[in-house]
Length: 77
Image (cartoon, rainbow, N blue to C red; front, side, top):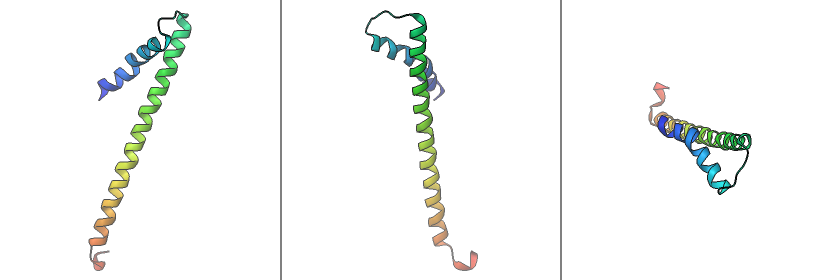
């Protein structure tokens, strides 16, 4: 998982900027800024996916506990 995250943060931004430029020449500072913007967006997307997965796992756990509580006899509550 960490390898995938490293590829997303290190390698992918350069490839995306290169493809978007289509061989055009720009200043090094502009290229670095473009790669940083892509990197920021990708990290935010990964963070959003982690938050969504956490919300889903939490919902599943809540449903599991609700089902368990429905099965318990009233004298145990």
